[in-house]
Length: 303
Image (cartoon, rainbow, N blue to C red; front, side):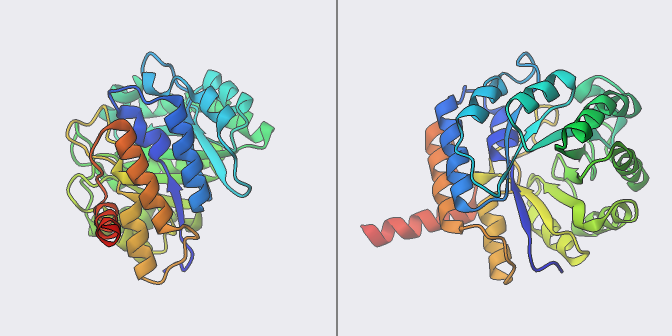
């Protein structure tokens, strides 16, 4: 089991992109700055996709221009095509993220093309990233199940891992987009992916729809995975997966990891305060159990 665990905070991008009410640039910048100060070494900050499809992320360039960059922190942006990549480079992004799927049905619904076609689309982005010396991360949606086709064979996940490896990805995310994975299946998928790509550069991205996310992180740790995605206050969901809840709450993940004696370099109390800030700013409930428990504890002490 890895002693040092890297947490990629995805709340500012993956978490906020599905909010129906427009989140102001000021709030996004404040959230990212709070997370940076909490000690994250990687924050997914913005998305350079068409505002027609994801209007919440239309201010990506402004967000990237205004954040206070912490030395040692990577600021990642989603950039699925060359137009997005150009925006990412102009914004001085440290890492660009491309996203495919292990499910043909989901690929068609999400990006209107087959898995093979999506990889072809990513080739110029990958080549440009290598030329520019920018990190490239690949994310594989529906690695544990699909809302349209149901079961996703392990071999399908492995196939996309191979394709992303050939594109030159520095890191690859195994994503349980709809939160249906269970520990045994997660370990099977992670072991199979690790046979094709270095295990220390694989990450787990778990949604908590069925309450399995923390169990799945523990299962991943047991087979050697040391990178996980999480979203402050449990922000998020998926527009193409009805009923899917947000990513596992960062506060809950940190509480578990720190309780196990694992090192993250992140201050849990600062993340709890960031979760409270964003929950109040956008007027939604805080989905972190640890966050709510600590906030209640602190309030009782001050009363």
